[in-house]
Amino acid sequence: MPAPAFTTLAVSLDGPIAEVRLARPEQANAINAAMWQEIRQAFAWIDATPQARVAILSGAGAHFCAGIDLAMLAGLEQRIADADEARRRENLHRLIGDLQDCLSSIERCRKPVLAAIHGACVGGGLDLAACCDMRYVAADAFFSIREIDLAMVADVGSLQRLPHLLSQGMLRELAYTGRRVGAEEAVRLGLANCVFDDFSALTAAVRQIAQTIAGKSPLAIRGIKEALNYSRDRPVADGLRQVAAWNAAQLLSADLKETLAARQAGRPPVFAD
Picture 1 (cartoon, rainbow, N blue to C red):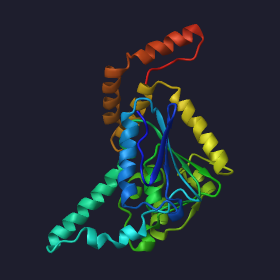
Picture 2: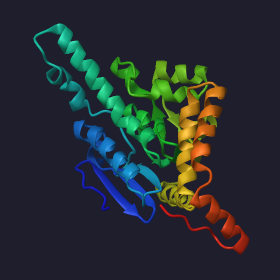
Picture 3: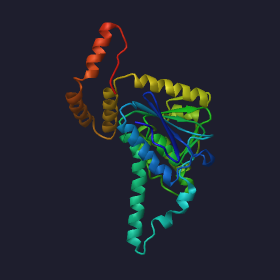
Picture 4: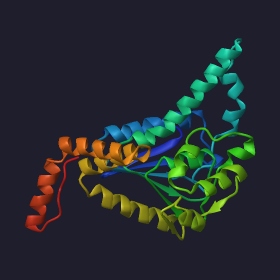
């Protein structure tokens, strides 16, 4: 299945690795109305494409993502307009929910998503990165929960997902102040996995990690992501029940048989998509 064409994203499939690149470099990849929708469409396509086993998310130009496009924010009143105030508020509520769902599509995607981040990753860009399974950064990367500087409460995921990465005290400091976090500090805080000298080294390393993941059992990788996402917000007992149900259904797979046969023969396993 060929990669779809988008106006704000560059999407490609190279072997088992899907690449999604934010493609508004002149606007520092600020997320406009079209990009919100295309992010959801892109990750739905990756989820539905058997050949895509893992995805890399990055940004074109000097920055990963500068957050929500301010022109879109300025046009908000027009988008939710209604003569009735209650319906106007209802329209805004539905719009926020739709934007949340666009980014949540990254978590819904059954394939691991690796973020390769350079330059600015602020506001909505950090919301976007927080949805990914892992975050790797170039030395020039910086993060900020920027919404406070727009007199806003971040509402598309940072305040809900970052508590699983950062301590409460640090998260609150960043949310209340909007201060920048550089690449090295991001790694120390657990916001990023690893820092690389420049964008070239970053992309090469992330691609190598993606290639390693792509060589594993696709069924098991999908099961791991589902188990981790399910367990994150639930008690341990609920997570244990979920993973038991998954393995009861999926453990005795062709992938398991291939792994055992490959080990016995001293060769790498070869898995179907």
